[in-house]
Amino acid sequence: MLIDWEKLPTVTAGMQPGASRKGICGDKLSMVLVTTEAGATFDGVTHWHDNEQLLVMIEGWITLTVDGNVFDVHAGESAFFPPGSRHAALGCAPEGCVYYEIFAPARPDQLPGWIGGTPLRFD
Image 1 (cartoon, rainbow, N blue to C red):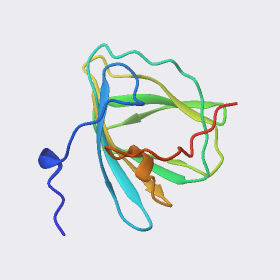
Image 2: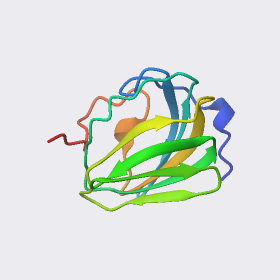
Image 3: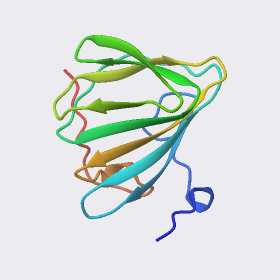
Image 4: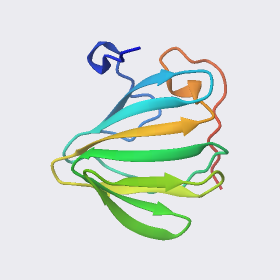
């Protein structure tokens, strides 16, 4: 099945100001395309969930913290978030950034119209 990201609805709810996402969800995994605009703000508040998460950087770069380790992920690189890891985005390239996030198990809470709970936890 081909995924046409241009045809999917854009969601800003639950995102940092200046960021948006488009998402798909299967039975066992989900994927979102995150676009962050130039000058977007980041609160740096860490969160965690029981999902495995993989970030695949497409354009620009992002600064992350994962379990107290701070590092940049550049276009063409990836970052893995183990289940239960405390993580947050701290900032991105001045021109913004674009990346995919893949979750297993799936996170339907990131889809438009979701009215259920969220797996996100904040300490």
